[in-house]
Image 1 (cartoon, rainbow, N blue to C red):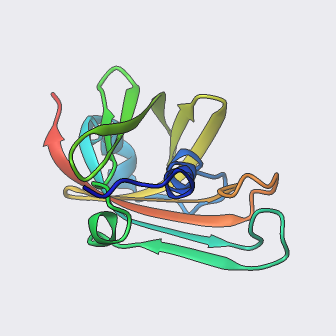
Image 2 (cartoon, rainbow, N blue to C red):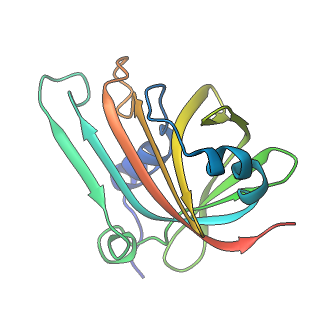
Image 3 (spheres, rainbow, N blue to C red):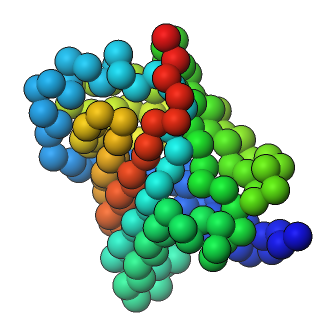
Length: 165
């Protein structure tokens, strides 16, 4: 059985704990009306892409792109899943390939105008979103590498795996 080494697990959790931003493009009017109604459920992360303008405080550019097959083949984990509840809470679960829970992040969410606001422990994220059927794309400018600068471009694609009523 292959497990994540501490450095790999750290970067995996870092990539997912620091997602969001404040600069974004507006969502469509239909999404604005429906996101709060359509978001409750469990969403699996299909793809993650982060472009770092600087990396870990160094003057060097870096790009991270995790595609659907990479979760298991490259990182030895299942894609993270996020449950959005109708009462505005969320629970993101990270699992090893075996299904064992590696980490859980709890937070709250709210649709504010054309943005999705997510508050997790010690950080608040603002995402632009595109919602089409059971596919959700979140984008934003963030401090993904936690170097004190919100200069990293973030994009994640989610697929709904179950709906909550």
